Length: 297
Image (cartoon, rainbow, N blue to C red):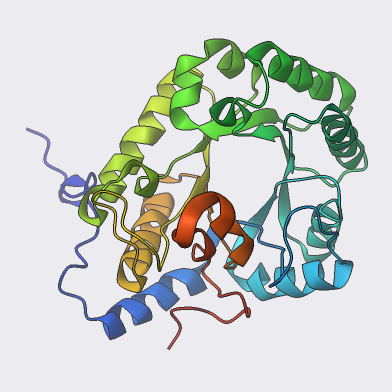
């Protein structure tokens, strides 16, 4: 027999069921102030959306807000001002996970790939991501994506790991993509699969293990996970401030205990996301659209 008390609850969430909202807010702040591995960038201000050009001032302001709490920032594009995110992050001492946004527009894809290679060769990229969920969206064929991955790997002269971001199960279904990546960059969202908050950490751990198996020993990074604080239910998944705090606390506690690299989605609320994600889309941030900490009383 080999009982280890610290492992008895390792597959389950921290027991937060009896915590009051006030107690959850206190614990949330404690976990945040201890620092997280990474945040996904949310650079768009109210009234902006992808397609609008970001300014250095707004990027710098938001990165300064999150700097005390994170080691890394993830950006999603290398055009329209997004290319400034890794440059400003470098100035502030934040490590950079930089993505090229790929879709069904060949000209935009060309600019994104060129931008990613340029930033990497200039020393602004610690991890390079060639696309985000393009297999899930069916924007490209698998072979087209593999060609872009190889182009980036061949074009970067610096020692930068190159991968592709998608839902964890895409790496199971597409072994050629897993094989082409230096690292496995997996989005893991129990919420989007209708999982009840009580089982969400266990569910995310299973997602992570499935990505590990698909990667055949390669490092796996959870590149997006989070829980919305408002909006409509999705099966057993209920958006609320309390559930958002519980999910954040559990995810970050697991990240530290098991040394799992997690990029939390997201840093700030962004109203434009309602168009693609429904009413929950605007409420994934740790800070609100006005850059105020949402659960910080």
